[in-house]
Length: 385
Image: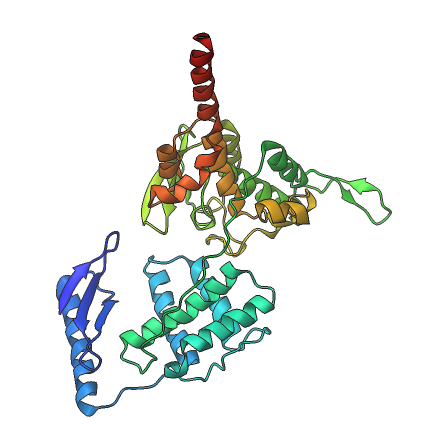
């Protein structure tokens, strides 16, 4: 039995051979002290040894495994190891699987985990695609089932050992917005934009109205995403303590993936937006949720509706470049920087990518340097004639 730590994690993990199957078992002890972690690991190993001696392995249904996985996630959210948004997403997909959602679940939730095979997963994926779901969304749903399978396996529950969960890589399109496209969306979110009245005359919404506040909020988030390149999880949980409120020159974005903060510069447009919000702040969060001083959950539908209204998601544009979403604003930030001469290495640091390979998707936009180098070469060649 071996205790070890993973990079960027404060918990101890354990690695040992399962006495029943001989396969390696690795899991988090959820303990930060090595002595406590050793006790948890020893107790789990003894439990498995006892079950092996009795010759009995427990069974668990899909519903039970998913519920147990949700309990684990709630504990991780409470400990700050996972975001509330991630938990909400898993809860929603679990609702689909267990029948709480109106959509059809193709595997009965009372099915024992050991009856879930590769054929079962392929059938689920095929039916979801026939429903019109994208490959990426299908992969997310299957990933929730996969996490339940791993939980059952780690707890020595009877499962189908050969399950591979092979997920096809979805077709990726890095959609980014031009300045004119962003300006069009920004204009549609203007809180002072007139509204049609009952007599078809237009009137400006008062500043105290709900629609004014919603538009202002969505417009501010639009600026925040496009001019910092932050992920939804990073801006929806952004605290005022992460903003440089003295110079308004930088903001520290906390990456929930790598558990690290990274500084991002603030252009004047973003600084002015943050200053205005700071003057009327009512809590610790820059973009608080509707339920008081808590992180925002769910995506901003106002931004998505404005993108559609601005004509960013017509059939031809979606086919060529992909759908414009809130995550497209992160691509927009990176694309503008690379197009204007920023190095891939610098953009990697600003986006918080773990590997430069992920950032290299923007390399084809580095046309400024390529054009200048080509011009210099051609000048040297033709000058010799």
